[in-house]
Image (cartoon, rainbow, N blue to C red; front, top):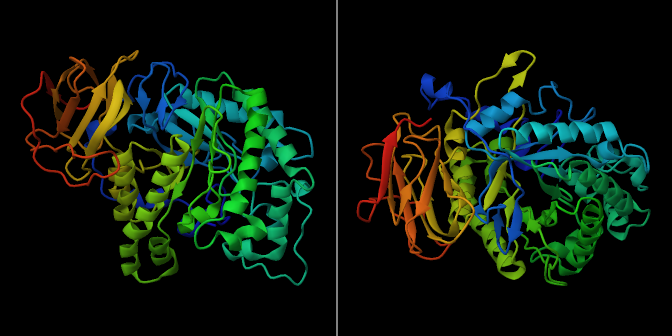
Length: 522
């Protein structure tokens, strides 16, 4: 229950009560002027991303990690190029230069089907246009069926009013987000959805099927997230304090129904399932328990927000509440670990964000430890009619989000560490045959004087100072890549299994590698 409706595209959970969290990141540039002017890296034609157990993999068989942002337009007219929110080619170039290779692009049921049974094909064309623009810059697009507060009937967005029969009574108070989720009329509306009382799920499946058909075959289309932050309706009380297995059985049946509708018309698309929104209050999900998730190319799409921090930031509560964030976020990530072990599908954290960079770091460290992909909330176009705005990734938040990371691994990931304060990076993996080299995006924020690289068990195949570092293994033994600023001691790869590392960095270990190089990051 973390959303409210504000100005266009600026809807928020508790921590989104300002329109643009990235606006807080504009202070303190980290790049030199020359670095700001550097061109985006060259990008090859995008291949399809698939699931393979708990990993995302590309057509070459490499394990893929995705870093990206959200771009969600919640009010009509939806996704209009030049509206100051929708992404442009200039935005795509900026994102690619900073190493982002995925965007969660919001679509809306009431935009897809504004009239009962009639799909707006012009809207589909605009969506496909953004997907194609982003693909030209090497960016994969996840299409997010976004809703907040069910419908504009309650001051929310998402489901068209014709699809919901419930209405608030004249005497029923509506105090807005988030307490409007407790309104009896809204819960009645959600019950209609989950029971498919008036066919809302059928119509939604038809709309998502049309969307799938429109973007199927477009290289940049990563997949479809079936429903953002679904509320359990009148069953919500059963979700506290340990989750709601009864409701999740019904919810999973709805997700499978929508999955079938998407697959019927866009069979090559990945489908992402999000847990019911009590997850954001650390309630575990029971998806995949009854029955197991057996369909191919399904991924998990949880969110990670620190409610105590956002209460401090946006409601004026004491700042010391941020100290509770590691406890809450550890619980969230423990829930992710439990789901992963049970369901054996990969995770893409499709929303997280905070105006406090130290809280943002909590998510990013935990994602790095597990090789989990993510999409940050929120990015709006920085290239409107009034000209380009300041780069939002040049401050404290950008220093966390722009990271050196292995975006494609020709092998099995082992452990990784990246320290955004020093730029020290270390990564170990076990190689296996693949159709391409290991690719490591080198942050354009953290190495103003270039970088040094050393490889144990492999060798560098990219040019000195390349923005994308490529590595080939020398044998079947583990490969370790060390990358740091010139003169830095570097980092040591943490020991132990994935998910148990720390964010501490220290002296790099190991002998001089068989591959090395230095140069200005390009």
